[in-house]
Amino acid sequence: MNEAELTVRRARIDRIDTLLVRLIAARQRQVARIARLKRDPDGVRDPQRVAAILERVLGSARRFGLDESIAVPVWRELLERSALAQQALLRRAVVSQHPLDEDHEAAGHPSRPGPLRAPIRERSFPRNPS
Image 1 (tube, rainbow, N blue to C red):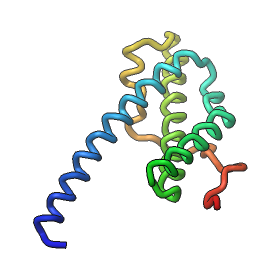
Image 2: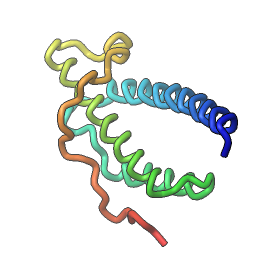
Image 3: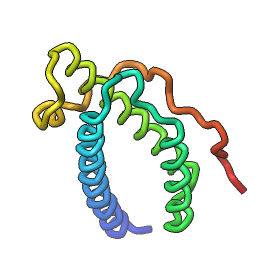
Image 4: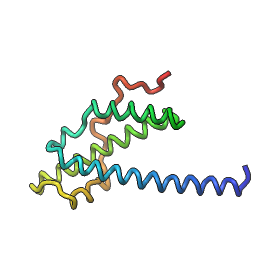
């Protein structure tokens, strides 16, 4: 591969990364809105929902040619960080004794998340399904 082609392909990756960030930011806003519907910071994780999301993502990965060894860990991390963001929002709402509103949602992501607590683990979801 020559240098010019490498530059073009890297520029494509940069554009894709920008799109991914925009999509993940849109997802994060929905996660914050969903937090408004929840009350218990320790009850934000729904194992059945996680399993359903991972199954759907795995199907999409297969359909679009995304390696499962990339898709599953990326979504596990995304789901875990989303749960942490919801917990942070709910804990701030409890401390301030104010229900969550749009202003709280905008600030809903932890800028420095601590260590992962109760990470989303695989149960019946295969890592390398055949």
